[in-house]
Length: 351
Image (cartoon, helix red, strand yellow):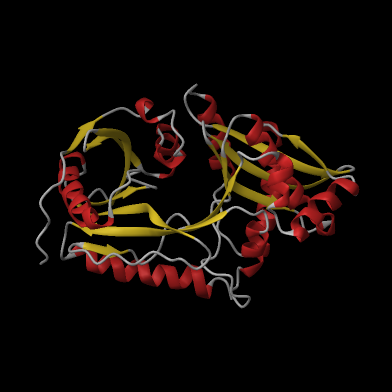
């Protein structure tokens, strides 16, 4: 076993409240997200993490199977900049300190790490840590595009691919209209989402979950603002996207589109309108929230890569999901199960 480096600073974990986790720009670490995931069987463990004098909220989600074994998950966290040489000590120490806040039979904790690199092919080096293992599958997409909203609208447009600018103008010229939607539009939007799911072979939640996405955001003044934008042509609803607006960042969360009138490019018009709305609200960046890891034309999601990167922005490659095991017996068995599950959903089901 690799000997841990001497600590470079104090690390302290304290109990907190879900409400105290709201009000920052990492919506996956917000109390809102914890309340929402509670609708799908997860329990929230709200904490405050202090390291080297800096305190941040820390949301840990736990899930218990058959009232016995439990797993823990930290979505997009901890949101701290840790020097690469300090990360092994930090993650090992943090994982051990978290044990007292987790269910007794928790056999591993998964971190969806934000650490990484920027640039088209500038992938981060894999971690080589004692006790830390790359997860069989990522939960949140580790690769994404983030658009800087600080320049003027003309400057943002100028940084886009010329085909993207053309499609935005085409949608406007052809009469595609973009408007805010509300919860009453969710039924119609969900019908489009089911169409998208069947076309692209992606898994989706039931309608009640997406209604909770909106209703729970409205319950707290400090929660992120979740809005829906809809694209229509004449009397036809063509597409719709769900966007999360935080203090500094807007994030494209879900997108749905019809099989009809796709030549009118409503998806391009929706994204550009969402960026303009985010800029008006004071957001300084717009997260496309997931792209394929590379630009290889043979990749099954190459079309998505081309669409999202066409809006310009900076490509981020994150480390993704990594596990710290508490059990040397149960965790390896779970890894085998999860690997098989990934093969089914990512390979067999998409054939």
